[in-house]
Amino acid sequence: MSAPELQADTVLSVEDLSVSYGKVQALEDVDIDVRSGETVAVIGPNGAGKSTLVDTIGGFHEYDGSVRFNGTEVADTSTPELIENGLFYCTERRDLFDFMSVEQNLRLGSYLNGEGEEKRLEEVFDLFPRLEERRSQETQSLSGGEKQMLSLGRGLMSDPEFLILDEPSIGLAPVILQDISEALESIQELSVEILICEQNITFALEHADRLYLLENGSVRRSGTPDSLESDKFVETYIGG
Image 1 (cartoon, rainbow, N blue to C red):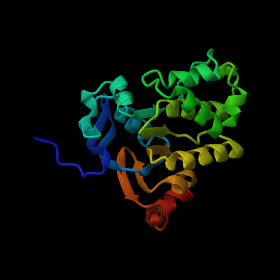
Image 2: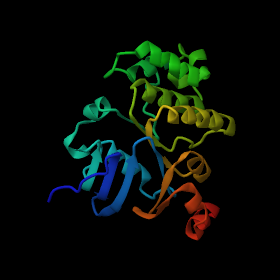
Image 3: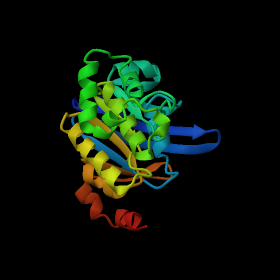
Image 4: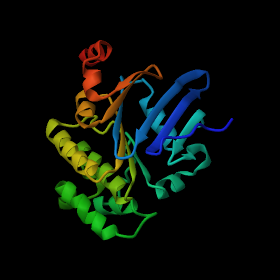
């Protein structure tokens, strides 16, 4: 059976997605999409399947259904090819090299796209002055919030068209979270498509054009921030 036609402005299309770990069903019949210029958030409690979803989009899990980035099935694309095509995934683990310097970690982000590296480095330092102050420090010496800045900065060094952020606010002090929030607003102005997976509902509502509520591996609600804030089911979830 051929895949259905995508809307012209659809950048990411996830249809009937199911993922299992052995006999454990992590995701079941998940449908989401991200359109040109959008920031979309997937919200839900710990264990809802958010990380499995973005790991799958990033090419790290086998799956049933369809996951297409710019019209191409992710299962038919290698991770380096996804990066070359403009997708960059900032994982919850951050995946930084602790014994390398801040600047070295940043430059690794442009290893598949070195053109304009110096300009992008300066842009990252403009977004995160703390990183410029610590550019020669070993990454292991950074605070958790600074490591989150570094992970996001390394993603920007790839000159992404589509950015996946898994739990970008987790464990951050309010002052650092504000820095991340302001940086995200600047990135949104560049018309980069962004998919955020978040437990922090307030953070997601502030930044997303549309949201999906994921619970027990399935999408339970979707809509704009205004529509979901007035949804009694979501209100109960947020209150919980």
